[in-house]
Image (cartoon, rainbow, N blue to C red; front, side, top):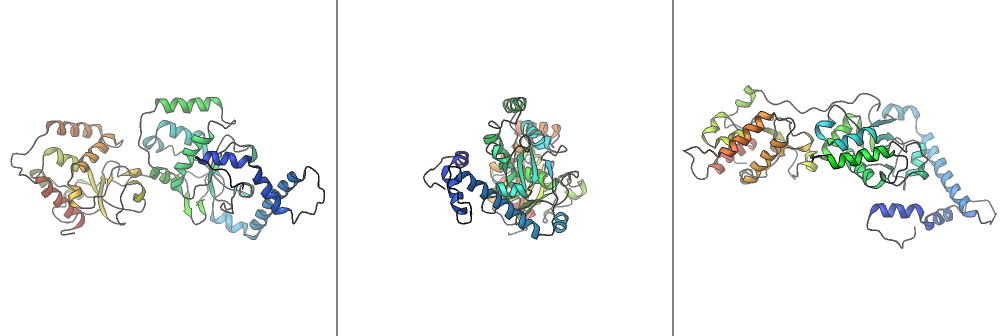
Length: 382
């Protein structure tokens, strides 16, 4: 509107836009040609602003009337729902994130007034799902603090929306009780580090009925219905796991077999028994730090099945598979995995501390062994 101000942070730009006098003048100029009021009093500017806002709401209502109300309600669910999924949040998120998702923010479907008042250049559609502060949801939009509402373009963006709420809105929202702010501050200071990825936030949003569409996020069903619990795929049975020798392993099967104990140290064998084969998906592109094609073979933690993007590995070559860093990454994940039994973690640490080596191992055993594993994953000469 004013084209003279620049900002280092998005929040500063939003705060300036709310107060910029050129913004109001610009909107007033747009409606000057259609205004029939000839009064040139000092209150002319406020009249223009009110006219513009009313025109926006009327225009939005006209658009809504053109759409079959029955069709809209049949296709998309409407309403609001907490982001909390109690059955799984505590397994994958820190206490502070669990608290915020349960008590502070919610997903909601935009109504006519939401679209008219918050849409910029028509980017927000009727019944599009956004994220908002629970405490000021009933406060007029013009009286809410910055960052009260956001409309992520996909379920993967919900994580960023909630983080933005914490950074920009929480401290300035007058509707948030002081005890809530103090509780969040306490949880932040007391919380131990918990690995959080966007994948779990996206998975949990889908379990609440949210889906990605060309018009943003939508509720595919009534948001008041119970969430669908997202569970990892089952580990393979002992028979399935040991049925693979040098042949190409099937999805869900172990990538090492009992006969491999003669080829590697006990620690390496035990470590690689904690993973099984998986395939690269589109969702892994954002959480597994891989650029491989969909369907590319890799392996994941057999205890949590790589849930929320953790414990998944897609080495691009047998050479990379054989590096020490791959083993170190697997080891680090197993020790942090919440699904892995304590006995497994203890045994893994014990095996590593012993540093036992088979007497018959020859130089180059690591490369030879992991070439076999690569062939099981991808087939020989791949």
